Length: 286
Image (cartoon, rainbow, N blue to C red):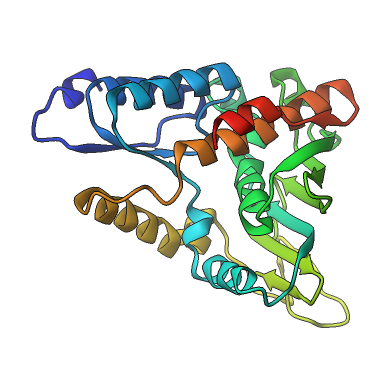
């Protein structure tokens, strides 16, 4: 990486390393004065995240965090309707994120990837604050390794449900699951005072059965299948904003705010009780 960053004709980099290397890579790229598009998460702890943001601020480079769902046409269309006031005041946020295939045990043993909250659920945490137009004040995480207990040995979980309480009084719920077997399933609903918006809902039929052998609904089999267009739009927008000297649409501050929720969720998982989101960190990232 150091040799690449020494290239004088290189203006920007895209960081897609394992989760635990993101903050270090951001710092190195910032010191080399390269603009940065970094995959989520910003880091897997708040101290490393702050160090990365400090390096970016010190050198004046631009940083975007890869929350690609914001670029998905369905989510973008839903957000426009929320911003237009069509559902009134957002009251309840509900999101489901289920991967089709279980990660191999080597993915846990490598110790370079963040646990479920950082690797997957953080997408929903970003959506939860972006689409509700409010910050999360408190989380209560429930987790399970019941079908794969060996995962607990590496400090991770197979499934989680995280209840959310917002600063302005709204509430929410996020479910994550790493081995749904029937498909890659991402759905979100925002319920407001005047109506509701659903993204990625299944067919409205009396009952829907889904299994590894098939089902009544056809679903994507991988996140790259579902969000391919969003990834392309994200990179194009990053390049466009760099070339036209415009601010990044998803900033390092956004990365810090979502990370603060993930850290609180992990602490809640470990403590077995509700945990407040680090308001000082969230406030500093504004």
